[in-house]
Image (cartoon, rainbow over all chains, first blue to last red; front, side, top):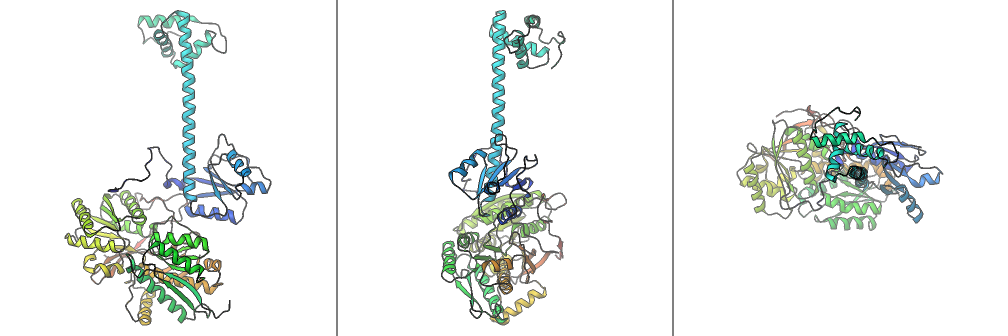
Length: 241
Length: 396
Protein backbone atom coordinates (compact mmCIF):
# COMPACT_ATOMS: atom_id res chain seq x y z
CA UNK A 1 0.00 0.00 0.00
CA UNK A 2 2.69 2.51 0.94
CA UNK A 3 5.86 1.55 -0.84
CA UNK A 4 9.02 2.63 0.91
CA UNK A 5 7.24 4.07 3.91
CA UNK A 6 5.57 2.37 6.80
CA UNK A 7 2.97 3.76 9.14
CA UNK A 8 4.94 6.22 11.31
CA UNK A 9 2.85 5.60 14.44
CA UNK A 10 2.74 1.85 14.79
CA UNK A 11 0.28 0.55 17.35
CA UNK A 12 -0.87 -2.79 18.66
CA UNK A 13 -3.62 -4.88 17.19
CA UNK A 14 -6.18 -3.72 19.71
CA UNK A 15 -9.51 -3.11 18.12
CA UNK A 16 -10.38 0.57 17.94
CA UNK A 17 -13.58 2.47 17.62
CA UNK A 18 -13.07 3.95 14.21
CA UNK A 19 -14.06 7.27 12.78
CA UNK A 20 -16.37 5.58 10.31
CA UNK A 21 -18.61 4.48 13.19
CA UNK A 22 -18.91 7.97 14.63
CA UNK A 23 -22.30 8.73 13.12
CA UNK A 24 -23.82 5.73 14.87
CA UNK A 25 -23.30 7.37 18.27
CA UNK A 26 -25.92 9.31 20.21
CA UNK A 27 -24.85 12.50 21.93
CA UNK A 28 -26.47 14.35 24.80
CA UNK A 29 -25.43 17.91 25.50
CA UNK A 30 -26.09 19.08 29.04
CA UNK A 31 -26.09 22.81 28.46
CA UNK A 32 -28.34 25.86 28.57
CA UNK A 33 -29.35 27.35 25.24
CA UNK A 34 -26.75 29.98 24.57
CA UNK A 35 -24.25 30.84 21.85
CA UNK A 36 -21.54 28.49 23.17
CA UNK A 37 -24.06 25.66 23.31
CA UNK A 38 -25.16 26.43 19.79
CA UNK A 39 -21.56 26.47 18.54
CA UNK A 40 -20.91 23.03 20.04
CA UNK A 41 -24.16 21.59 18.76
CA UNK A 42 -23.55 23.02 15.28
CA UNK A 43 -20.11 21.49 15.03
CA UNK A 44 -21.29 18.05 16.14
CA UNK A 45 -24.08 18.24 13.56
CA UNK A 46 -21.56 19.36 10.95
CA UNK A 47 -19.58 16.20 11.72
CA UNK A 48 -22.84 14.31 11.22
CA UNK A 49 -23.56 13.20 14.79
CA UNK A 50 -27.01 12.65 16.34
CA UNK A 51 -27.33 15.32 18.98
CA UNK A 52 -29.87 15.89 21.76
CA UNK A 53 -29.82 18.69 24.29
CA UNK A 54 -31.05 18.82 27.86
CA UNK A 55 -31.16 21.49 30.57
CA UNK A 56 -31.17 21.49 33.56
CA UNK A 57 -29.00 18.39 34.16
CA UNK A 58 -31.16 15.24 34.52
CA UNK A 59 -31.07 12.83 37.48
CA UNK A 60 -30.15 9.86 35.30
CA UNK A 61 -29.13 9.13 31.74
CA UNK A 62 -30.88 6.79 29.34
CA UNK A 63 -28.83 3.80 28.20
CA UNK A 64 -28.91 4.73 24.55
CA UNK A 65 -26.80 7.83 25.15
CA UNK A 66 -23.18 7.12 24.19
CA UNK A 67 -21.53 10.45 24.89
CA UNK A 68 -22.45 13.20 27.34
CA UNK A 69 -21.06 16.72 27.02
CA UNK A 70 -21.53 18.87 30.09
CA UNK A 71 -20.94 22.60 30.35
CA UNK A 72 -19.46 22.40 33.83
CA UNK A 73 -19.27 26.06 34.66
CA UNK A 74 -22.86 26.70 33.51
CA UNK A 75 -24.00 23.98 35.93
CA UNK A 76 -22.19 25.69 38.80
CA UNK A 77 -23.28 29.23 37.91
CA UNK A 78 -26.92 28.23 37.81
CA UNK A 79 -26.66 26.28 41.11
CA UNK A 80 -27.64 23.03 39.46
CA UNK A 81 -26.35 19.58 40.32
CA UNK A 82 -24.76 17.31 37.79
CA UNK A 83 -25.51 13.71 38.73
CA UNK A 84 -22.99 11.25 37.42
CA UNK A 85 -21.98 7.70 38.33
CA UNK A 86 -18.25 8.29 38.09
CA UNK A 87 -17.47 4.74 39.28
CA UNK A 88 -19.63 3.09 36.70
CA UNK A 89 -20.36 5.60 33.97
CA UNK A 90 -23.08 4.82 31.45
CA UNK A 91 -21.46 6.95 28.76
CA UNK A 92 -18.32 8.81 27.76
CA UNK A 93 -18.16 12.09 29.65
CA UNK A 94 -16.69 15.19 28.06
CA UNK A 95 -16.50 18.39 30.07
CA UNK A 96 -16.77 21.79 28.43
CA UNK A 97 -15.01 24.30 30.64
CA UNK A 98 -14.05 27.95 30.84
CA UNK A 99 -12.07 27.85 34.08
CA UNK A 100 -8.86 25.97 34.62
CA UNK A 101 -8.03 26.80 38.24
CA UNK A 102 -6.98 24.12 40.76
CA UNK A 103 -10.46 23.79 42.27
CA UNK A 104 -12.18 23.24 38.96
CA UNK A 105 -9.50 20.82 37.79
CA UNK A 106 -9.97 18.88 41.01
CA UNK A 107 -13.69 18.73 40.34
CA UNK A 108 -13.15 17.44 36.79
CA UNK A 109 -10.85 14.71 38.08
CA UNK A 110 -13.46 13.64 40.59
CA UNK A 111 -16.06 13.47 37.85
CA UNK A 112 -13.57 11.29 35.94
CA UNK A 113 -14.11 13.12 32.70
CA UNK A 114 -12.83 11.32 29.61
CA UNK A 115 -11.91 14.54 27.83
CA UNK A 116 -12.06 18.29 28.21
CA UNK A 117 -12.93 20.97 25.67
CA UNK A 118 -12.29 24.65 26.39
CA UNK A 119 -14.57 27.58 25.74
CA UNK A 120 -15.02 29.38 23.41
CA UNK A 121 -15.75 26.43 21.12
CA UNK A 122 -13.09 26.01 18.48
CA UNK A 123 -14.11 23.34 15.97
CA UNK A 124 -10.59 22.15 15.22
CA UNK A 125 -9.64 19.19 17.39
CA UNK A 126 -13.11 18.29 18.68
CA UNK A 127 -13.45 15.30 16.33
CA UNK A 128 -10.08 13.85 17.32
CA UNK A 129 -10.57 14.55 21.02
CA UNK A 130 -13.94 12.85 20.81
CA UNK A 131 -12.62 9.71 19.15
CA UNK A 132 -9.67 9.47 21.53
CA UNK A 133 -12.08 9.76 24.49
CA UNK A 134 -14.43 7.11 23.12
CA UNK A 135 -11.53 4.74 22.54
CA UNK A 136 -10.07 5.35 25.99
CA UNK A 137 -13.48 4.77 27.55
CA UNK A 138 -13.98 1.51 25.65
CA UNK A 139 -10.50 0.34 26.55
CA UNK A 140 -11.15 1.13 30.20
CA UNK A 141 -14.37 -0.87 30.03
CA UNK A 142 -12.56 -3.80 28.45
CA UNK A 143 -9.83 -3.68 31.07
CA UNK A 144 -12.44 -3.43 33.83
CA UNK A 145 -14.26 -6.47 32.47
CA UNK A 146 -11.02 -8.44 32.17
CA UNK A 147 -10.14 -7.50 35.72
CA UNK A 148 -13.52 -8.68 36.98
CA UNK A 149 -13.08 -11.95 35.15
CA UNK A 150 -9.57 -12.38 36.52
CA UNK A 151 -10.76 -11.69 40.06
CA UNK A 152 -13.57 -14.20 39.73
CA UNK A 153 -11.13 -16.74 38.33
CA UNK A 154 -8.75 -16.13 41.20
CA UNK A 155 -11.57 -16.58 43.73
CA UNK A 156 -12.60 -19.80 42.04
CA UNK A 157 -9.04 -21.16 42.09
CA UNK A 158 -8.75 -20.38 45.77
CA UNK A 159 -11.98 -22.23 46.46
CA UNK A 160 -10.91 -25.31 44.53
CA UNK A 161 -7.54 -25.31 46.28
CA UNK A 162 -9.21 -25.22 49.67
CA UNK A 163 -11.69 -27.96 48.73
CA UNK A 164 -8.82 -30.08 47.49
CA UNK A 165 -7.01 -29.55 50.75
CA UNK A 166 -10.18 -30.47 52.67
CA UNK A 167 -10.53 -33.73 50.76
CA UNK A 168 -6.83 -34.49 51.20
CA UNK A 169 -7.05 -33.98 54.96
CA UNK A 170 -10.35 -35.80 55.40
CA UNK A 171 -9.49 -38.83 53.31
CA UNK A 172 -5.73 -38.89 53.23
CA UNK A 173 -5.49 -38.61 49.45
CA UNK A 174 -2.79 -37.14 47.32
CA UNK A 175 -3.49 -33.77 45.72
CA UNK A 176 -3.97 -35.38 42.33
CA UNK A 177 -6.57 -37.86 43.58
CA UNK A 178 -8.33 -35.17 45.62
CA UNK A 179 -8.76 -33.10 42.49
CA UNK A 180 -9.94 -36.11 40.48
CA UNK A 181 -12.60 -36.75 43.09
CA UNK A 182 -13.85 -33.18 42.90
CA UNK A 183 -13.86 -33.32 39.14
CA UNK A 184 -15.74 -36.61 39.15
CA UNK A 185 -18.36 -35.17 41.45
CA UNK A 186 -18.74 -32.15 39.24
CA UNK A 187 -19.22 -34.35 36.17
CA UNK A 188 -21.80 -36.56 37.82
CA UNK A 189 -23.74 -33.61 39.10
CA UNK A 190 -23.28 -31.74 35.85
CA UNK A 191 -21.85 -28.73 37.47
CA UNK A 192 -18.48 -27.04 37.75
CA UNK A 193 -15.54 -28.07 39.91
CA UNK A 194 -15.87 -24.65 41.49
CA UNK A 195 -19.50 -25.23 42.51
CA UNK A 196 -18.64 -28.66 43.91
CA UNK A 197 -15.71 -27.18 45.78
CA UNK A 198 -17.99 -24.60 47.35
CA UNK A 199 -20.44 -27.34 48.25
CA UNK A 200 -17.76 -29.58 49.72
CA UNK A 201 -16.33 -26.74 51.78
CA UNK A 202 -19.78 -25.88 53.10
CA UNK A 203 -20.56 -29.47 54.01
CA UNK A 204 -17.22 -30.02 55.66
CA UNK A 205 -17.80 -26.95 57.70
CA UNK A 206 -14.95 -25.05 56.01
CA UNK A 207 -17.29 -22.64 54.40
CA UNK A 208 -19.45 -19.87 55.76
CA UNK A 209 -22.57 -21.93 56.44
CA UNK A 210 -21.63 -24.92 58.66
CA UNK A 211 -23.87 -27.57 57.21
CA UNK A 212 -23.64 -31.18 58.35
CA UNK A 213 -21.13 -33.14 56.37
CA UNK A 214 -22.43 -35.52 53.85
CA UNK A 215 -19.45 -37.58 53.13
CA UNK A 216 -21.51 -40.17 51.37
CA UNK A 217 -21.17 -38.24 48.15
CA UNK A 218 -17.47 -38.05 48.67
CA UNK A 219 -17.21 -41.74 49.30
CA UNK A 220 -19.35 -42.44 46.30
CA UNK A 221 -17.15 -40.29 44.15
CA UNK A 222 -14.08 -41.94 45.52
CA UNK A 223 -15.54 -45.33 44.77
CA UNK A 224 -16.39 -44.38 41.22
CA UNK A 225 -13.01 -42.88 40.76
CA UNK A 226 -11.07 -45.87 41.98
CA UNK A 227 -13.28 -48.17 39.91
CA UNK A 228 -12.30 -46.12 36.91
CA UNK A 229 -15.97 -45.68 36.08
CA UNK A 230 -15.70 -42.08 35.00
CA UNK A 231 -18.73 -42.19 32.77
CA UNK A 232 -21.12 -43.05 35.57
CA UNK A 233 -24.14 -40.87 35.56
CA UNK A 234 -27.36 -40.42 37.47
CA UNK A 235 -26.16 -42.30 40.51
CA UNK A 236 -26.84 -39.25 42.61
CA UNK A 237 -30.24 -37.78 43.01
CA UNK A 238 -29.07 -34.20 42.84
CA UNK A 239 -29.17 -33.52 39.12
CA UNK A 240 -29.22 -29.81 39.37
CA UNK A 241 -26.59 -28.10 37.29
CA UNK B 1 -15.20 55.02 7.18
CA UNK B 2 -16.34 57.36 4.47
CA UNK B 3 -18.23 55.82 1.62
CA UNK B 4 -15.78 56.79 -1.13
CA UNK B 5 -12.81 54.88 0.23
CA UNK B 6 -11.85 51.75 -1.66
CA UNK B 7 -12.33 48.36 -0.03
CA UNK B 8 -9.13 46.35 -0.03
CA UNK B 9 -9.18 42.62 -0.51
CA UNK B 10 -6.18 40.28 -0.33
CA UNK B 11 -5.34 37.94 -3.20
CA UNK B 12 -2.81 35.11 -2.74
CA UNK B 13 -2.09 33.06 -5.84
CA UNK B 14 1.29 31.89 -7.13
CA UNK B 15 2.51 32.95 -10.54
CA UNK B 16 5.48 30.63 -10.29
CA UNK B 17 6.14 27.33 -8.53
CA UNK B 18 4.84 23.82 -8.92
CA UNK B 19 1.14 24.67 -8.91
CA UNK B 20 1.39 27.96 -10.81
CA UNK B 21 -0.53 26.81 -13.88
CA UNK B 22 -3.80 26.44 -12.03
CA UNK B 23 -3.13 29.31 -9.66
CA UNK B 24 -2.48 31.72 -12.56
CA UNK B 25 -5.91 30.83 -13.91
CA UNK B 26 -7.42 31.44 -10.47
CA UNK B 27 -5.71 34.80 -10.32
CA UNK B 28 -7.02 35.74 -13.76
CA UNK B 29 -10.55 34.74 -12.76
CA UNK B 30 -10.28 36.79 -9.57
CA UNK B 31 -9.02 39.88 -11.40
CA UNK B 32 -11.74 39.44 -14.01
CA UNK B 33 -14.46 39.21 -11.37
CA UNK B 34 -13.14 42.31 -9.58
CA UNK B 35 -13.11 44.23 -12.88
CA UNK B 36 -16.73 43.19 -13.43
CA UNK B 37 -17.69 44.20 -9.89
CA UNK B 38 -16.09 47.62 -10.24
CA UNK B 39 -17.55 48.15 -13.71
CA UNK B 40 -20.92 47.51 -12.14
CA UNK B 41 -20.48 50.21 -9.51
CA UNK B 42 -18.21 48.41 -7.05
CA UNK B 43 -19.49 47.88 -3.53
CA UNK B 44 -22.29 50.43 -3.34
CA UNK B 45 -20.08 52.99 -5.04
CA UNK B 46 -16.81 52.02 -3.40
CA UNK B 47 -14.17 50.37 -5.53
CA UNK B 48 -13.04 46.85 -4.65
CA UNK B 49 -9.26 47.04 -4.69
CA UNK B 50 -7.21 43.81 -4.81
CA UNK B 51 -3.83 43.63 -3.12
CA UNK B 52 -2.15 40.81 -4.98
CA UNK B 53 0.82 38.90 -3.56
CA UNK B 54 2.75 36.05 -5.16
CA UNK B 55 3.83 33.41 -2.61
CA UNK B 56 5.50 31.37 -5.37
CA UNK B 57 3.94 28.13 -4.14
CA UNK B 58 5.57 28.15 -0.69
CA UNK B 59 3.19 27.55 2.24
CA UNK B 60 5.37 29.62 4.57
CA UNK B 61 5.13 32.56 2.15
CA UNK B 62 1.34 32.21 2.05
CA UNK B 63 1.33 32.43 5.83
CA UNK B 64 3.66 35.42 6.02
CA UNK B 65 1.86 37.32 3.25
CA UNK B 66 -1.56 36.61 4.75
CA UNK B 67 -0.38 38.07 8.05
CA UNK B 68 0.97 41.15 6.28
CA UNK B 69 -2.22 41.65 4.28
CA UNK B 70 -4.31 41.52 7.44
CA UNK B 71 -2.18 43.59 9.80
CA UNK B 72 -0.43 45.85 7.28
CA UNK B 73 -3.09 46.38 4.65
CA UNK B 74 -6.09 45.86 6.94
CA UNK B 75 -7.84 43.48 4.57
CA UNK B 76 -10.76 41.51 6.02
CA UNK B 77 -10.98 38.96 3.24
CA UNK B 78 -8.29 36.97 1.43
CA UNK B 79 -9.02 35.11 -1.80
CA UNK B 80 -6.43 32.45 -2.40
CA UNK B 81 -4.50 29.20 -1.85
CA UNK B 82 -4.60 26.05 -3.92
CA UNK B 83 -3.08 23.12 -1.99
CA UNK B 84 -4.11 21.96 1.46
CA UNK B 85 -0.74 22.84 2.96
CA UNK B 86 -1.09 26.41 1.69
CA UNK B 87 -4.60 26.62 3.15
CA UNK B 88 -3.52 25.20 6.52
CA UNK B 89 -0.70 27.74 6.65
CA UNK B 90 -3.12 30.63 6.06
CA UNK B 91 -5.74 29.16 8.40
CA UNK B 92 -3.43 29.62 11.38
CA UNK B 93 -3.26 33.34 10.54
CA UNK B 94 -6.93 34.06 9.75
CA UNK B 95 -7.99 32.16 12.87
CA UNK B 96 -5.88 34.42 15.03
CA UNK B 97 -6.25 37.73 13.23
CA UNK B 98 -9.99 37.68 12.55
CA UNK B 99 -10.05 37.55 8.77
CA UNK B 100 -11.79 35.38 6.22
CA UNK B 101 -10.15 33.12 3.65
CA UNK B 102 -12.13 32.14 0.56
CA UNK B 103 -10.74 28.89 -0.81
CA UNK B 104 -11.52 27.88 -4.38
CA UNK B 105 -9.93 24.44 -4.74
CA UNK B 106 -11.33 21.01 -4.09
CA UNK B 107 -9.79 19.32 -1.08
CA UNK B 108 -10.16 16.26 1.17
CA UNK B 109 -12.69 17.70 3.65
CA UNK B 110 -12.57 17.34 7.46
CA UNK B 111 -12.19 20.98 8.11
CA UNK B 112 -14.37 23.78 9.34
CA UNK B 113 -13.29 27.16 10.52
CA UNK B 114 -15.31 30.27 11.14
CA UNK B 115 -12.59 31.99 9.14
CA UNK B 116 -12.82 30.01 5.91
CA UNK B 117 -15.48 29.56 3.25
CA UNK B 118 -14.88 26.66 0.90
CA UNK B 119 -15.90 27.03 -2.75
CA UNK B 120 -14.28 23.85 -4.09
CA UNK B 121 -15.62 20.31 -4.00
CA UNK B 122 -15.26 17.80 -1.16
CA UNK B 123 -15.14 14.02 -1.85
CA UNK B 124 -18.86 13.32 -1.47
CA UNK B 125 -19.39 15.52 -4.51
CA UNK B 126 -16.89 14.64 -7.26
CA UNK B 127 -15.48 11.31 -6.00
CA UNK B 128 -18.86 9.61 -5.63
CA UNK B 129 -19.94 10.82 -9.03
CA UNK B 130 -16.73 9.58 -10.62
CA UNK B 131 -17.01 6.19 -8.88
CA UNK B 132 -20.56 5.71 -10.21
CA UNK B 133 -19.27 6.44 -13.67
CA UNK B 134 -16.30 4.05 -13.40
CA UNK B 135 -18.53 1.28 -12.04
CA UNK B 136 -20.52 1.29 -15.25
CA UNK B 137 -17.70 -0.99 -16.39
CA UNK B 138 -18.29 -4.45 -14.92
CA UNK B 139 -15.96 -5.08 -11.96
CA UNK B 140 -13.26 -2.59 -12.93
CA UNK B 141 -9.68 -3.08 -11.72
CA UNK B 142 -8.23 0.19 -10.54
CA UNK B 143 -4.63 1.26 -9.98
CA UNK B 144 -4.50 4.27 -7.66
CA UNK B 145 -1.61 6.74 -7.94
CA UNK B 146 -0.90 10.26 -6.79
CA UNK B 147 1.38 12.82 -5.20
CA UNK B 148 2.40 11.92 -1.66
CA UNK B 149 0.42 14.23 0.57
CA UNK B 150 -2.93 14.35 2.33
CA UNK B 151 -5.30 15.07 -0.57
CA UNK B 152 -4.16 12.31 -2.96
CA UNK B 153 -4.00 9.76 -0.15
CA UNK B 154 -7.47 10.59 1.16
CA UNK B 155 -8.84 10.71 -2.36
CA UNK B 156 -7.27 7.31 -3.08
CA UNK B 157 -8.65 5.81 0.11
CA UNK B 158 -12.17 7.01 -0.66
CA UNK B 159 -12.10 5.84 -4.29
CA UNK B 160 -10.72 2.46 -3.18
CA UNK B 161 -13.64 2.03 -0.75
CA UNK B 162 -16.20 3.06 -3.35
CA UNK B 163 -14.82 0.83 -6.09
CA UNK B 164 -14.47 -2.21 -3.82
CA UNK B 165 -17.99 -1.82 -2.43
CA UNK B 166 -19.30 -1.47 -5.99
CA UNK B 167 -17.80 -4.80 -7.08
CA UNK B 168 -14.50 -3.54 -8.48
CA UNK B 169 -10.96 -4.21 -7.32
CA UNK B 170 -7.89 -2.18 -6.45
CA UNK B 171 -4.93 -3.68 -8.29
CA UNK B 172 -2.38 -1.44 -6.61
CA UNK B 173 -1.72 1.88 -5.00
CA UNK B 174 1.39 4.09 -5.21
CA UNK B 175 2.31 7.61 -4.20
CA UNK B 176 5.33 9.56 -5.36
CA UNK B 177 7.10 12.40 -3.64
CA UNK B 178 6.81 15.87 -5.14
CA UNK B 179 10.50 15.71 -5.98
CA UNK B 180 10.16 12.48 -7.99
CA UNK B 181 11.84 12.71 -11.39
CA UNK B 182 10.83 11.36 -14.81
CA UNK B 183 12.73 8.17 -14.07
CA UNK B 184 10.54 7.36 -11.09
CA UNK B 185 7.40 8.07 -13.10
CA UNK B 186 8.69 5.76 -15.80
CA UNK B 187 9.23 3.00 -13.25
CA UNK B 188 5.76 3.60 -11.84
CA UNK B 189 4.08 3.35 -15.24
CA UNK B 190 6.01 0.15 -16.01
CA UNK B 191 4.85 -1.32 -12.72
CA UNK B 192 1.25 -0.37 -13.50
CA UNK B 193 1.49 -1.77 -17.01
CA UNK B 194 2.61 -5.08 -15.56
CA UNK B 195 -0.52 -5.20 -13.41
CA UNK B 196 -2.59 -4.14 -16.40
CA UNK B 197 -5.52 -2.53 -14.57
CA UNK B 198 -8.59 -1.31 -16.47
CA UNK B 199 -8.32 2.17 -15.08
CA UNK B 200 -5.63 4.31 -13.47
CA UNK B 201 -7.07 6.67 -10.86
CA UNK B 202 -4.66 9.57 -11.02
CA UNK B 203 -4.26 12.04 -8.16
CA UNK B 204 -1.05 13.72 -9.26
CA UNK B 205 -1.13 17.46 -8.88
CA UNK B 206 0.64 20.27 -10.74
CA UNK B 207 3.98 19.45 -12.38
CA UNK B 208 3.88 15.87 -11.17
CA UNK B 209 0.68 15.44 -13.18
CA UNK B 210 2.47 16.50 -16.35
CA UNK B 211 5.29 14.01 -15.67
CA UNK B 212 2.72 11.29 -15.10
CA UNK B 213 0.99 11.74 -18.48
CA UNK B 214 4.37 12.08 -20.23
CA UNK B 215 5.57 8.74 -18.88
CA UNK B 216 2.21 7.21 -19.68
CA UNK B 217 2.53 8.22 -23.34
CA UNK B 218 6.21 7.25 -23.55
CA UNK B 219 5.29 3.76 -22.40
CA UNK B 220 2.92 3.39 -25.32
CA UNK B 221 -0.31 3.44 -23.36
CA UNK B 222 -3.53 5.05 -24.52
CA UNK B 223 -7.08 5.59 -23.30
CA UNK B 224 -8.52 2.65 -25.21
CA UNK B 225 -6.16 0.27 -23.37
CA UNK B 226 -5.94 1.77 -19.95
CA UNK B 227 -8.05 4.82 -19.19
CA UNK B 228 -6.88 7.45 -16.73
CA UNK B 229 -9.53 8.92 -14.43
CA UNK B 230 -8.77 12.06 -12.47
CA UNK B 231 -10.33 14.64 -10.19
CA UNK B 232 -7.62 17.20 -10.82
CA UNK B 233 -6.61 17.12 -14.49
CA UNK B 234 -8.30 20.25 -15.78
CA UNK B 235 -8.16 22.35 -18.93
CA UNK B 236 -5.30 24.30 -17.29
CA UNK B 237 -3.24 21.13 -16.77
CA UNK B 238 -3.94 19.95 -20.32
CA UNK B 239 -2.49 23.21 -21.67
CA UNK B 240 0.80 22.21 -20.06
CA UNK B 241 0.61 18.48 -20.64
CA UNK B 242 -0.60 18.63 -24.23
CA UNK B 243 -4.01 17.50 -25.45
CA UNK B 244 -2.59 14.49 -27.28
CA UNK B 245 -1.44 12.95 -23.97
CA UNK B 246 -4.79 13.34 -22.25
CA UNK B 247 -7.02 12.45 -25.20
CA UNK B 248 -9.90 10.19 -24.21
CA UNK B 249 -9.13 10.26 -20.48
CA UNK B 250 -11.76 11.39 -18.02
CA UNK B 251 -12.03 13.95 -15.27
CA UNK B 252 -14.80 14.55 -12.75
CA UNK B 253 -15.21 18.21 -11.88
CA UNK B 254 -17.84 20.73 -10.90
CA UNK B 255 -17.09 22.81 -13.98
CA UNK B 256 -15.85 22.40 -17.53
CA UNK B 257 -15.25 25.36 -19.83
CA UNK B 258 -17.16 23.55 -22.57
CA UNK B 259 -20.46 23.75 -20.64
CA UNK B 260 -23.21 24.97 -22.92
CA UNK B 261 -25.40 26.71 -20.33
CA UNK B 262 -25.98 30.37 -21.04
CA UNK B 263 -24.44 31.61 -17.78
CA UNK B 264 -21.16 29.97 -18.72
CA UNK B 265 -21.19 31.04 -22.34
CA UNK B 266 -21.98 34.63 -21.38
CA UNK B 267 -19.28 34.66 -18.72
CA UNK B 268 -16.60 33.40 -21.11
CA UNK B 269 -17.71 35.99 -23.70
CA UNK B 270 -17.46 38.79 -21.13
CA UNK B 271 -13.99 37.58 -20.19
CA UNK B 272 -12.79 37.69 -23.78
CA UNK B 273 -14.27 41.15 -24.29
CA UNK B 274 -12.89 42.60 -21.07
CA UNK B 275 -9.43 41.03 -20.98
CA UNK B 276 -8.77 40.57 -24.68
CA UNK B 277 -7.54 37.02 -24.24
CA UNK B 278 -8.81 33.48 -24.28
CA UNK B 279 -9.74 32.43 -20.72
CA UNK B 280 -7.91 29.45 -19.22
CA UNK B 281 -11.20 28.36 -17.72
CA UNK B 282 -11.26 25.28 -15.48
CA UNK B 283 -12.89 24.12 -12.23
CA UNK B 284 -10.65 26.35 -10.08
CA UNK B 285 -11.15 29.30 -12.43
CA UNK B 286 -14.91 28.93 -11.99
CA UNK B 287 -14.66 28.69 -8.20
CA UNK B 288 -12.24 31.63 -7.94
CA UNK B 289 -14.54 33.74 -10.11
CA UNK B 290 -17.58 32.70 -8.11
CA UNK B 291 -16.12 33.34 -4.67
CA UNK B 292 -15.07 36.87 -5.62
CA UNK B 293 -18.61 37.69 -6.71
CA UNK B 294 -20.12 36.03 -3.64
CA UNK B 295 -17.90 38.14 -1.37
CA UNK B 296 -18.88 41.33 -3.25
CA UNK B 297 -22.53 40.34 -3.02
CA UNK B 298 -22.18 39.90 0.75
CA UNK B 299 -20.34 43.21 1.09
CA UNK B 300 -23.08 45.04 -0.78
CA UNK B 301 -25.78 43.52 1.38
CA UNK B 302 -24.25 44.53 4.70
CA UNK B 303 -21.31 46.36 6.22
CA UNK B 304 -18.34 45.81 3.86
CA UNK B 305 -15.86 46.66 6.59
CA UNK B 306 -17.20 44.15 9.10
CA UNK B 307 -15.95 40.59 9.01
CA UNK B 308 -19.06 39.24 10.72
CA UNK B 309 -21.35 41.03 8.31
CA UNK B 310 -19.43 39.72 5.28
CA UNK B 311 -19.38 36.19 6.65
CA UNK B 312 -23.06 36.05 7.46
CA UNK B 313 -23.78 37.55 4.04
CA UNK B 314 -21.89 34.69 2.41
CA UNK B 315 -23.37 31.81 4.42
CA UNK B 316 -26.65 30.69 2.95
CA UNK B 317 -26.19 32.87 -0.14
CA UNK B 318 -26.49 31.61 -3.68
CA UNK B 319 -24.99 32.74 -6.98
CA UNK B 320 -25.45 31.89 -10.61
CA UNK B 321 -21.96 30.58 -11.28
CA UNK B 322 -20.70 29.39 -14.67
CA UNK B 323 -21.03 25.77 -13.39
CA UNK B 324 -24.70 26.31 -12.37
CA UNK B 325 -26.45 27.96 -9.44
CA UNK B 326 -24.37 27.30 -6.34
CA UNK B 327 -25.35 27.82 -2.71
CA UNK B 328 -23.20 28.14 0.38
CA UNK B 329 -24.27 25.75 3.14
CA UNK B 330 -24.79 27.83 6.28
CA UNK B 331 -23.87 24.98 8.64
CA UNK B 332 -20.58 23.80 7.15
CA UNK B 333 -19.52 26.75 4.94
CA UNK B 334 -18.95 24.54 1.90
CA UNK B 335 -20.84 24.80 -1.41
CA UNK B 336 -23.60 22.93 -3.20
CA UNK B 337 -21.97 22.01 -6.48
CA UNK B 338 -22.70 20.37 -9.84
CA UNK B 339 -20.41 17.39 -10.51
CA UNK B 340 -19.89 16.36 -14.13
CA UNK B 341 -17.83 13.84 -16.05
CA UNK B 342 -15.77 15.08 -18.98
CA UNK B 343 -13.79 13.16 -21.60
CA UNK B 344 -10.73 15.08 -22.81
CA UNK B 345 -10.86 16.05 -26.48
CA UNK B 346 -8.18 16.85 -29.05
CA UNK B 347 -8.66 20.60 -28.47
CA UNK B 348 -7.82 20.29 -24.76
CA UNK B 349 -11.42 20.83 -23.71
CA UNK B 350 -13.81 18.24 -22.30
CA UNK B 351 -16.80 16.51 -23.81
CA UNK B 352 -19.32 16.36 -20.95
CA UNK B 353 -20.78 12.85 -20.83
CA UNK B 354 -22.62 12.89 -17.52
CA UNK B 355 -23.90 15.48 -15.09
CA UNK B 356 -26.10 15.65 -12.00
CA UNK B 357 -29.71 16.71 -12.13
CA UNK B 358 -29.44 18.60 -8.87
CA UNK B 359 -26.65 20.34 -7.02
CA UNK B 360 -24.93 18.00 -4.55
CA UNK B 361 -24.78 19.12 -0.95
CA UNK B 362 -21.36 19.17 0.68
CA UNK B 363 -20.67 16.66 3.48
CA UNK B 364 -17.07 17.50 4.42
CA UNK B 365 -17.07 15.21 7.46
CA UNK B 366 -18.29 12.14 5.64
CA UNK B 367 -16.20 9.16 6.76
CA UNK B 368 -17.57 6.14 4.97
CA UNK B 369 -17.84 5.70 1.27
CA UNK B 370 -19.59 2.53 0.21
CA UNK B 371 -22.20 1.58 -2.31
CA UNK B 372 -25.03 -0.73 -1.34
CA UNK B 373 -26.48 -3.33 -3.71
CA UNK B 374 -28.64 -0.76 -5.44
CA UNK B 375 -25.62 1.44 -6.09
CA UNK B 376 -26.74 3.97 -3.54
CA UNK B 377 -24.12 5.35 -1.25
CA UNK B 378 -25.04 3.63 2.00
CA UNK B 379 -26.95 6.03 4.17
CA UNK B 380 -25.87 6.90 7.64
CA UNK B 381 -28.25 7.78 10.40
CA UNK B 382 -27.94 11.51 10.14
CA UNK B 383 -26.04 12.06 6.95
CA UNK B 384 -27.50 15.10 5.25
CA UNK B 385 -29.99 13.96 2.62
CA UNK B 386 -29.11 11.57 -0.10
CA UNK B 387 -25.58 11.82 -1.33
CA UNK B 388 -26.08 9.88 -4.45
CA UNK B 389 -26.11 12.15 -7.43
CA UNK B 390 -28.73 11.34 -10.02
CA UNK B 391 -27.19 11.11 -13.42
CA UNK B 392 -28.64 12.54 -16.54
CA UNK B 393 -27.50 12.93 -20.08
CA UNK B 394 -25.24 9.96 -20.53
CA UNK B 395 -24.47 10.95 -24.06
CA UNK B 396 -21.49 8.77 -24.65
